[in-house]
Image (cartoon, rainbow, N blue to C red; front, top):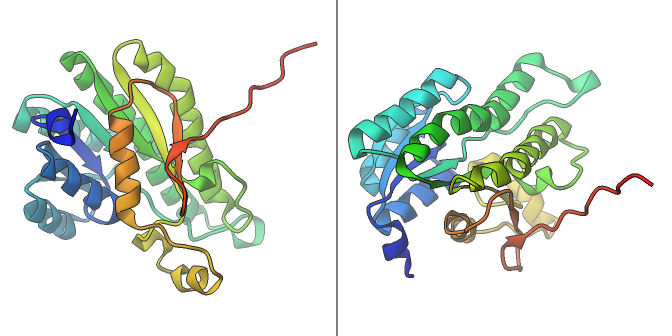
Amino acid sequence: MNPGEQFEGKVALVTGGANGLGRATAARLAGVGARVVVADNEEETGRVAASQIGAEFIHTDVTDPAASEAAVAFAVKEFGGLDIAFLNAGVSTGCGLVENFDIEKYRRAMGVNLDGVVFGLNAVVPAMRERGGGAIVATSSLAGLAPVPFDPVYAANKHAVIGLARSMGPVLATEGIHFNAICPGFADTRIIADFRDSLVEGGIPVIPVEEVVDAVLGLFGLDAGGECHFVQAGMDAQEFRFRNVPGPR
């Protein structure tokens, strides 16, 4: 099945769709025939992005569960239902722990990066049940698969997204709703803007956004739930294989 056949006429909601990976994914989905709703807290940028890619826009603060519910209701009202959700909204942390802890920055990062996925999941699943199934991808990170000493708060919320996907994915798959997570390395988006030059100088490759979009669309077509696919420079995107927890003796 080519992408046009897979996505033609499907209704997709993309959070964090005004910039970066969200915008690129929304544009790709629209380009292969999906009807797309861009949801973002940046209203002006979001409206411009939606207009340029042929999508609809709704102002959405993903830290507010009512806003996620309103975004889903908007998609259903505009297009008759919901088939695809990319729960992608994310922010950098901007604080550490102990001496460098900032409670407001912590709450903002946890609110967007974790609550945004939880509230988004709660909002999209009922609409997908009405359609008899659907596909959900949440944005985690390589920081959700490995320790990140320089940003432990970011690692914590991205690990939590992994745990959510692995726990709920197999459950939702029994209903034909396939929920998985994407775990990119350092993709070329504004979330790495403050240290992009340092990455390049240190010889760490920055991943083109379109390579991550390829992996996201691949997950939308996956007939499984609870998988976490990583995207790393110089490698094909693939499932991360978790070791089983040892059983009792």
